[in-house]
Length: 82
Image (cartoon, rainbow, N blue to C red):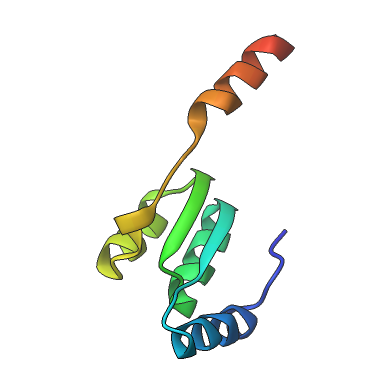
């Protein structure tokens, strides 16, 4: 499920640029990452389900400068469920 449309994300990016700052998003699936990159988002956090196409889009748009995946908490949580 994607929360915001690309147009909504782009509006946020433009508003942030007007204030000399940028937008960061929490995105897990590849579709959300690609949508955010297309809108001009500069920071993707998490991105556990990133695929090659989304990673390539991030690299081409310099989005990956601030890309973070906090994987250890996820691994611990999954291990507890086993």
